[in-house]
Length: 424
Ligand SMILES: Cc1cc2nc3c(=O)[nH]c(=O)nc-3n(C[C@H](O)[C@H](O)[C@H](O)COP(=O)(O)OP(=O)(O)OC[C@H]3O[C@@H](n4cnc5c(N)ncnc54)[C@H](O)[C@@H]3O)c2cc1C
Image (cartoon, rainbow, N blue to C red):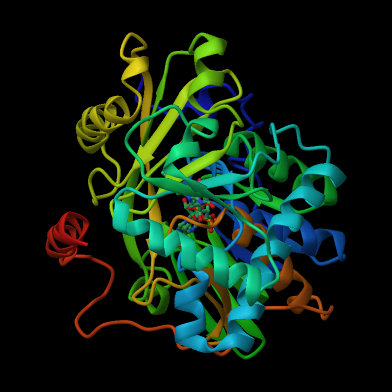
């Protein structure tokens, strides 16, 4: 078993962006080289801005090359919760933005010729317990009546058409969602940003950001860059350079395994429509077929960010979970195991806006492939004085007293959510 992401292993490496000369000035400094940062840098460069992007590790190193590759409609909170929390108008705005985000990915992939196995296969949300069916049913009805958006409710008796397992009680299909190879996508985005003239850097961390009369001074170990604007795009890896965001982001580990390639007939039998699949647990499983017919199976097996030990432990837990659902794959060993860090927030909504003069977009809570691409582009438009849209504008970005970025409460939260999965 290799302790690395399947996606990175099968994707050609990028040329190195290390040790390139840093400019003394830029119009915009983007911090973080994942989808959020690269989408912003690409758009800014196309709009003629002098944009410098700093990535502490290598471009795409964070969640953007390691995720499940599920490009989903909606947000982490369902439409019912959004209606309750914000009322109909805002819930509509958030829902519509999620659809626009998906289209933003599709358009980018097409316009920039990014070969990343993008395919609209739809997603399937599965009821882990019989009583969870009513959640799926009310989402189905609300989406249809309030949002004019069709989904397909699949009863247990017909679930075989969607998935070959006895473990679930029904499902909800949304045909619009898509799948892709996340590493191919982020590396393709980096190449597109480079082609457009963005100044990209690997191995350069923003260490501190000072406000100046004309904007900001971004300090790095290799000197400072003066910039009119700064865009923080660091999500789950937000650190000390931006303490105002660090105390609002909760880094949570999420882990994935991928089997050896299955016999294509078996892969087709297990997940016939090749959908992106997840379930209704708090400690949810998310899984899919890879383009070469492996089972890619993820979950929040441990809450803590990835280390070789947490990856190994999680791989064992996830394999048991996968075999519970698909005993048919027992003879296919786990070939890859990896983890990445999610950026959660205290209200489990993404947050994007301007704080202390600095722009930011983060907190996608494991639902960010589409939205990060979209928000990166929207903030580029905003910074360059173009028309923009931010559905999260003006939302309070909460923190908690005594919290500065070290999530000491995760073991308690973990026990609580395990308990809730047991009783609810
Ligand atoms: C295991 C896993 C599975 C997931 N599955 C899905 C999925 O299937 N579908 C979905 O929609 N979403 C999924 N997500 C979430 C999705 O991957 C993220 O929302 C998305 O990649 C966020 O992109 P980003 O650019 O904001 O952050 P990232 O890609 O995490 O990039 C942030 C970057 O900032 C850099 N950085 C941090 N601090 C500094 C600094 N001071 N200076 C310079 N650079 C810095 C980091 O090195 C990092 O590379 C998953 C996430 C994980 C971890």
